[in-house]
Picture (cartoon, rainbow, N blue to C red):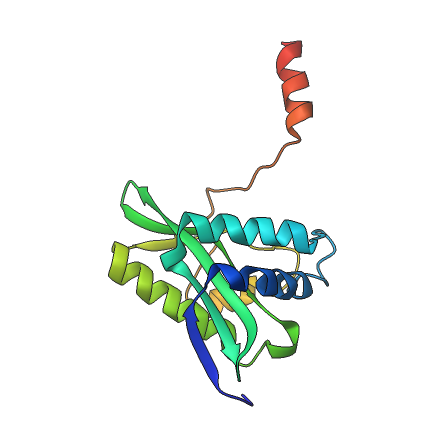
Length: 160
């Protein structure tokens, strides 16, 4: 990697820059169309929910990625859940995501005795699922992700 990588906790003032990085990181994803406003709202949600589990990566002082997540109690102990890990495409495949992930997982285990990380990721593309699998994550056979248009759901509920 060219340049010096440093990791630190996110400050509220970093969120605007991170929103730009988030949009850039997801600009090639056909199914998600993030604006700086929607990205800022998401990152602000995670930051407000769990600021002590909100980390960013800088290379030579330039913000290039982040990992924000939360902890939720579960039947087998605390789980690190959902969250967002993203890296500017110009800095991907340089160990930034791995460094952020290692810091996040170590912090969640140390601060909250977290047992697992549960997340949703893309299935249609090889990456990032292959990246997670490389580190020992696996797909959960008996789980699925559901989504529904609430106006349509409510309409169907009223029909019954």
